[in-house]
Each structure stands twice: as C-alpha cells, then as structure tokens.
Image 1 (cartoon, rainbow, N blue to C red):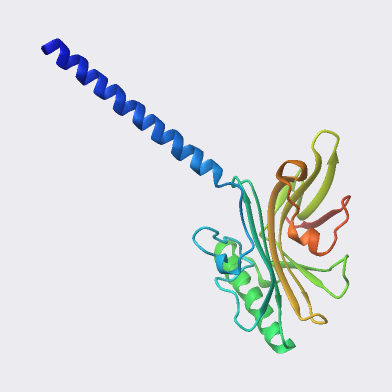
Image 2 (cartoon, one colour; image 1 turned 60 degrees about the horizontal axis):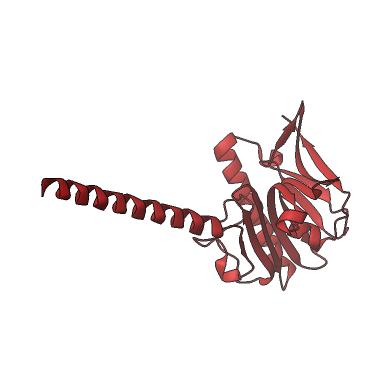
Length: 218
C-alpha cells in the first residue's frame, strides 16, 4: 500500500505540473495574440487598453472639437503610432487648444529636463500642404554619430521592402482648415510584414522616398 500511495502521489504531482504548464502556455499564446493593438474608436482614446504616453496628447479630447480621425497602433511594444485629427468651429477655440497643448508639453519638459520654453518645439512649414504648420516636439530624439535629430525616413530595401524609420511627435495645424493634428510615431515599421503605414504619411500623402530630419542640439 505504501508503494501505491507514493506512485499515486507522484502521478498527482505530475498531473498538476502538466496542468500548470498548459495554463502558462495558454496565457503566453493569449498575450501574444493581442498584438498588434489597433483601434480607430474615439471611445478608446487614452483608455486602459490603449494608453497614450506621449507628451503632445492631453488626457481627454476637447468637447468643442469634432473628431475627424483617431487611431492607435502598437506592434509588440516596439513600433507605435498614435494619431488624432480634430476640426474646430472657430479660430478662437482652436488657438486656445493649441496654446493648451504647447503649455502642457513645456511644463512636462521643464519638470523633466529643465528646458527653456523655446527649446521644446521646432517649427516648420509642412512641405506637403503649406497651409499647415508643423511643431516638432524636441523630446523625441535619435542619435547618429555626433548628430541629434527628430523626424522620419522612408527607406527601400531589396529583401524587406519599404521601412518607415520614425521617431517624432508633432502638432500640425492649419487656421485655414481649422484643423489640429497630433501624432506620435516611434519605431521601424516594415510595411510588407506589418501591413501598416503611419497615419501622418497617409494624411499628407508623403512620398515613399522621403527623408525629413530636424536636427537638434545634443
């Protein structure tokens, strides 16, 4: 009887261990299947499932603006693209919103790095639609040799196809259209694999041989 009890005990332990392994494998499979994360639903904005951790986005979308487009993309925590396009009814509301955005970024940057207010953004005219002004947030930085920059590059490779190399956060706005665009993108997005194009490139029909680097101080 003693031997049988020991055998039964060992069998029970083996069954429990196998069950635990199966549960762990299922959890890993379920977690993997959740990627890539993607939504275009405005109600998902900055939600628990789709958190926005970018300085150029506010906690909530302003009620006085119409949502033209919103999207959130997260590929294995390596490539991210968040896009929000808002339409305002009058210039006054739009100006107040832009001021609020800029103020929030400056406060966060000064708290974190002690930057001067004029160091938090670099202003450029949008090269694809001249009525738009692009404000590049300087907290998005890439380093190559002695150079520090923010921006993007679209490269073509024989094996991989098109790759979007991005590290930018920008506010793009037009008083002519009464539109404010906020977008943040980081990573190297392989179009043929991920079947995804950053929304800023789609919105402004950015050429597929484009390189746009905004050089910053180290």
